[in-house]
Image (tube, rainbow, N blue to C red):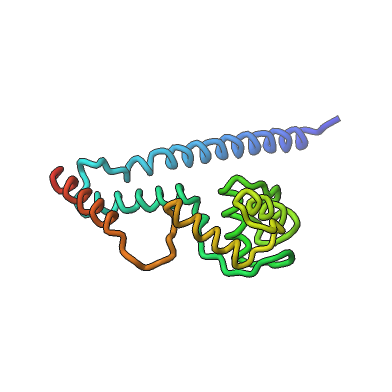
Length: 179
């Protein structure tokens, strides 16, 4: 059947496959251990942070909270937009509509098709815009802009909000008292 030469080749191939498999498993295990250990080595407790680092952390967290509460969906969206449009403005509109609970099965693709038109028409009807035709024009733009302002999103002006400044000063004072 098989000669001794063939048996030797089969044994060598089997050993090679076994060693290669074990090396691959060892490599993956070491990589996984590194992934879990490396971030912990860079973690810093609040007690070890300087005042500047704490303020930077607070600002970062506030930014994340603002993005999550507004859904990142209150971008200024120029009008008009209608079926067939395909660009970043359509993506912003779709993101807004999805954040408002409208359904676009394909998601925010950047293409204004029938799904976006139906979602926009639904949003228009729910928000008293007539006719609710699924066309993004000046009336819909004004309604979305007003909703973003009332929701605490981007109010699209450059005015300073004094209450926000007061909150920042209070937070800095509290952080300073910790040191």
